[in-house]
Length: 245
Image (tube, rainbow, N blue to C red; front, side):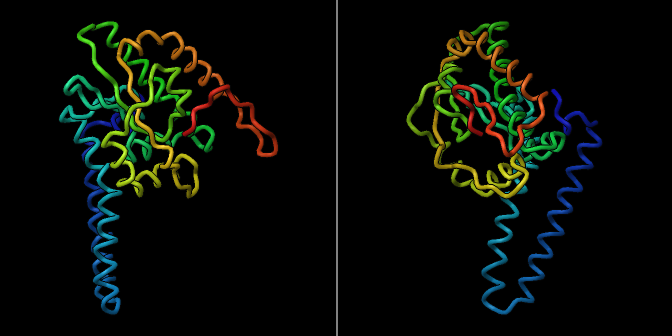
């Protein structure tokens, strides 16, 4: 898996995490110090808010590698993670802010970064389906709550709209983290279209059945990613049902 963080040695990974924690602690000290300087009640009001925002942004950098080590998060692509099977359902996720930070530092343009996000989602689906073909096992359902996939694109992968799950609420609760991640993709401050959040479900057999189409779509995106980004003064050619990251 071409993930820049996990490609490092365990010692280097620990060093990066320690530096990150130290930086967060230092920033928290600065926030508290500024709160003591500000006149009341502004300091007492702003400090808890800023500390809560800092904790929310920092959490993926600690939780994601820890979840992978515990086995509660499984990577099928650098920007595609699943929660292990539970009660016949496997929950799919895109990469976290932690993954976006490390993986998207390679692609330089917003076009390349968007292509990487969509390709990794497809690569993850393909790897998941191929694993089921190799290992077999009982049937199970796949569930994804996302604002990235357009319904038409989801149907091409075998997914159908489902009633909103608890994941939809989590999306809104993590609006700050998602905004930072979305801005990394766009290379400027942008607010993600959270109003497009939808829940999709599919059976693993449906995904396996569409493996040829998924491979063809991933190959097409791979070819497009090698082409230069369209000029801003020209209308880029769009596929019939484009993904909408």
